[in-house]
Length: 623
Image (cartoon, rainbow, N blue to C red; front, side, top):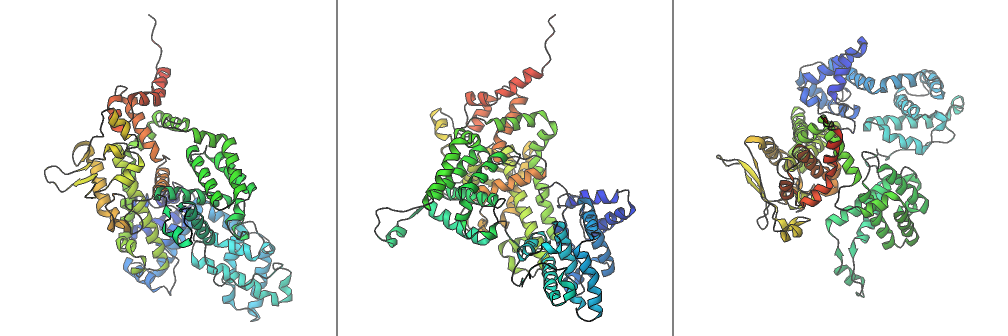
């Protein structure tokens, strides 16, 4: 899904109800194209309303595309009908987002691109330029104008930047052909005054951007993390002995280092041009460090910003990494910022008590019945989107299970591979989040680490028990030993134990039971790690490891944002407790057992609920 909540259903509704009859036709044809192919409302409500997603399932028509022509025949429509419906559907999406209006406005510009386009017909008529050479020029013009560039502003680097604006490899091919035409026209004196100052040069082999961080920086970052998280025996006398005795930190620790450095690099890209750097040291000068850390702290106040505790941990990991690489002054700069910036100081002082930011989130949850309902039903909404992804793949004839295990095993076109990749991701992230939320809401608000790293059916330490095939009482049991809990030793000293929890196919647990059953049957097999481990949430790689926590954090953030309820795993615990206490102020003894926190801590954390009730209750009549 897109970060936006706009769906294809929203766009069809917008188009078919528009006051302009032309736009209504666009919407009707978009609806017909998707309806004829088997898409229903619940599919369209789960499909992102973006042009890239649309072009994956409805690519531009081409006579040479044998696969597409075969599918059009199977749908029972003519190529001319598909061409019209596909084009109108694209225009409906562009009109909704304002792209169509912007493009039409750009076409009307009387700039140098326009002047050069008026010369091309004469050159073609004189057989000086082949018409096929000009095919990519309009796309180059449009994307350049969208960035506010005229033809004089074009350089090789700027043309390469246009890769990011291309929705498909074919569009990037058009841009390259347009740039090649501009260089070709340099041989004609009448065109020189309308061309860029310098030749653009060959763009052969320059592919589209596939990552927000360049590969050379990604590889160097991996080396930095490797050296920062590997502990060597300082008494070893030879390199061979040092390597043989090296100890790698835990996967969780390594993951934090990776997240910290990738977050830094991604943010540094807002201030520095990756293409002008020759490595990571160039991104870690003192000025850039200060800009990046300050902007991350400022964004911590935003809905999707990093929490102060996380920022402090990231800053500390960056400091240690720089020290290990010998960049002492840069490490000292981070230390200085950690001691002076209020957000980082707040992060250092953060404890188990509820933070002010979390309290604000809980207040908003309780004050809005719609948000409360979304919180309590989010597992159902995530599951609906996961179901839709699998059904769309079936409509498109894509075997997601085979694709997940080996993407090259299926004979798919470029568009179909992109669609399969997106649907696989949608099924995974919404399927995982639906199962996670079902456990949190219907079993117990376990900490994220316990669910991701401890929930498994390993024969030596089973914590998840599948009794779904029991005809008399189908159910799932979850029993995480108290010793594995963060506050487990304190619970044991108090004489408390974390009880087992049951998610039954009957009564109030039926929805959660069905979601876990769906996850185990349809979603978990989409993870290669499912074949190598017994973790309930396996890794994305085929190894005996759980899903990386940072990966899950990003998925939950994206899924919750898509339903209009941005949250983190930490919010489950506080959100659920807030709702329970708000409904029943005497439930602290039950919450003490379920959460492992003492009643004293719970009362201190959620004192704001009782205070709010006293403020909102009308005063008693003195009489």
